[in-house]
Length: 247
Image (cartoon, rainbow, N blue to C red; front, side):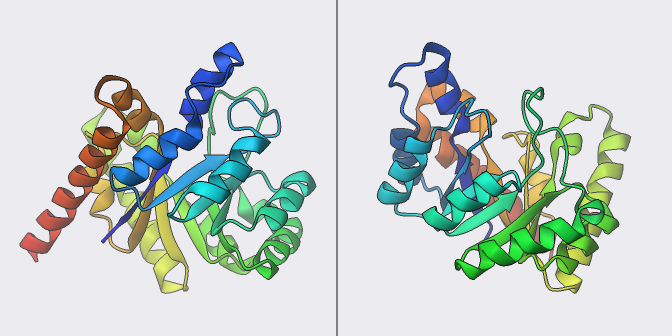
């Protein structure tokens, strides 16, 4: 069964709009767990635009499920993650001017520097994933730098409106997942996923974990975090059940 990790960054985004103490991403994470989350994801950005260092420490100390720490491959973040020792870390590209992550990490053009980063993080006992676009070059390079897993960027799939274009992108995601599995990488996926479009991604062979944040947090405004998480988990389970039925 696919694991659902809930990204609580956007809870912190609302809090930071007023530089206040609420809503609390730590409380949101605990409610997400009550709703059935298999793990919690956070992205500590260089500019600290949403998640803060204090949030990271509190989440590590209080949540009961695995913590996935998204991070740019910088010396500052490597120091933080090896001191924190979350269950897993995901290397992502980061630009100050972007609203959210805009694409996957070009691992194939950063192999030499990333190898050292990956080795140092793994020596601390942390599972290491690379967030990549569904490109064969990035998948293969992730294996070359020693990553344990890839997270396939589903952002483009989520943004495409045309059915034909979306199917083509979904095909690329399938190919990336197949390739990753064939060379010994675990397969995760995420970015831009919603209740409406998560089904086909949940049916991609080899996908073990989905990271979803914004759409769940948006839904939680109206129905609460527990129910919002429960509804997403149910959408994933229904998609998985459909595949099993067809088999």
